Length: 249
Image 1 (cartoon, rainbow, N blue to C red):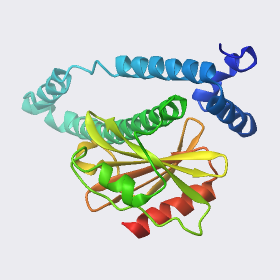
Image 2 (cartoon, helix red, strand yellow):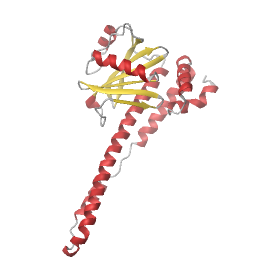
Image 3 (tube, helix red, strand yellow):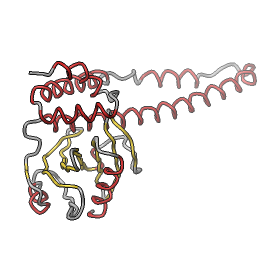
Image 4 (tube, one colour):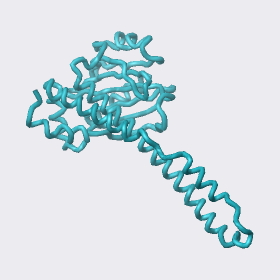
């Protein structure tokens, strides 16, 4: 049964608008309450379905062709001197507009990707079986992925660090398989996603530190793989585990 005092806060939490202290409290509550965890997972799935529906339709590609055709139309010679500056200005505006739309589209695609990863992280936390291979031994977890994903990766040595490896599972993004590894630091769980970079469209290769919903995100590329570290742990903890993974790679 979903706890009444948390129900009204679930949507705010999933939208990343819950204050940090309450978000941490709700995150801890979800780990121990199957009813609230199931309700959270249901709302995440509904949100992802709405996102997919919102991006199902795109503008008619013939629109650009019509604009280009109209600009290329021949005009009487006596008007050329009068219209040339206007046409040049219009072309400049079109070029600037096209660049802006392209950059804006890339930002939307990257934000949508991060939102999907946040959804996967929440779904993992809400699952009764968050990992398929349960082990704190990196030499057990890494071989488990052989034959299940089309690449390999290295795991860091965590001795004398505050981090613990919980296990891993196969995850999918853009219909491509990848690895999701779960690390624990104090009362927080961190998901580390690894996918082939070529399977992710319109994602910057630059190293980034961002946020998605109520989670911190770290991302970078290495040897054709894209790494995403996401969780509600502190920025310092995400930086530390990211550096450990980079050193292992």
